[in-house]
Image (cartoon, rainbow, N blue to C red; front, side, top):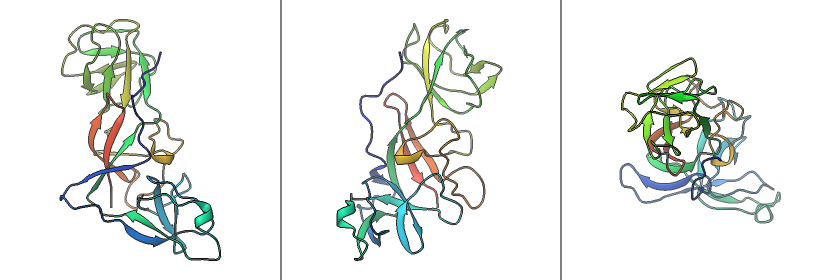
Length: 221
């Protein structure tokens, strides 16, 4: 059994602007003969907008999010084609977690959850979804070998076999890495190498909705 959200976002979905601005995507020339999906992260490379991917480097930082879909047939190599991109730095986007960390407890207490797969999850958000503490959402405050601790107690002691899901490691000053196609990866395999000052990725957490496996983020500039 694994935890499943009721809905998955279509890439990065714009939900609001911190200053209350209305949506105002800007047209950019697209890389010819390329399909673009609404909600994709995009970069500028060689004067053209193209999709961000795991080869994105510090010279091609994320421009924004595609506001519309463009079919390859509508973007021929012998014409200039423009697509609208959300670039407002205060736009907030909602995105599903594509690869949440699943934990099966081997034991615990009202303030701890023990599991063999716990590693580097300080600051993450955890949802217990089976057992007596089902529905409990907590922040991981400390991790020792195979044990995650919380300061706000669970309503009941965590027991062997209880299941939990962990998302959005918020351990690096509120910044997290995106996976491709708008879905987060819990591993290091799909990191966008896009940050000129440090290695914490181009997304900043605004809100975590662990029940729906979604995170609201800003694209850090």
